[in-house]
Image (tube, rainbow, N blue to C red; front, side):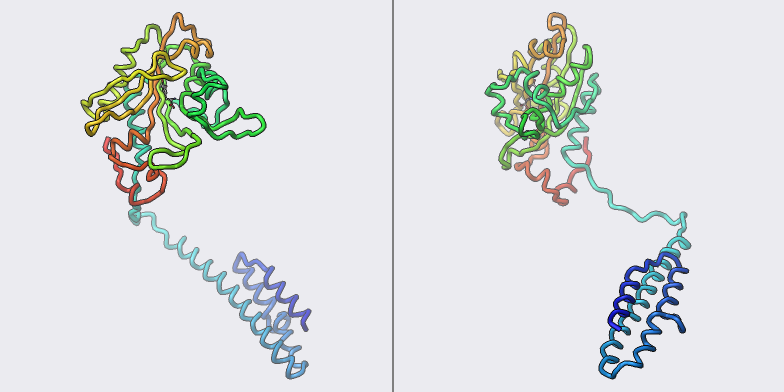
Length: 328
Ligand code: DAH
């Protein structure tokens, strides 16, 4: 008896009902009046002792319930689907779906793209996984250069530490310049990574926008004009200052500050592309010159939306995200 019950159990479990015919076959196989597996078991039960009849009877009854349930579930599902198909009426107006809002970083990204493509920049994307040469060496940051320490990053390959998550979007300059001949005006925006402790003002991942322009006779005043156009489009007529600075890939280099809440706030780095960088990508610096700039999107967003903590961008808090409407 034990063996027969186990076999019946296994068979019930393994039977997959896919159609109405299947459900009928299933029912007959187990509950059919003459040859149903469980029907026969019930008959055999009569020949066992009272004690056995009690325990086995209970088990077989349970199996009977299981069979009936399986058929019921199939029918419910099937009827529901049929009903859905039969009742489908394409003329019924759609239910309103709540539309989400754009992430502030996406809004600012889009705004920068609109502004710069208006003055002849084209938009390109670059890879987030970079090699050492594009991220550092070609940008005039050789292996023992101290500025590498400030941009410590995540290396993807331990043995040969050459593949890394880009620390800035300046690597896109190299990728683009290697493949194209000037003149060009290019913009790229994307994620960059640094080995930083997460705090209200720093994160291991953030977004940068990188712009660069190469042509004959590009000068620092072209750079100033472009930055002025970009910043005043965001903030109106604010005071801007160019503060001398140092980047290995630009000469001269500057940092741009805006006057905000009675203090100067640094918002981007820029400069004239160093002839050594142009040489690394086979552009003749006797004929061509160019400028480049890079700015942190989160920082710009903090100023625009008057926020204090950059962690909120990526906490996925719907209450925060819902506030942003495309106002540009
Ligand atoms: N790559 C720099 C950084 O991440 C920012 C930067 C500075 C970009 C000067 C530039 C530039 O294109 O000219 O700190």
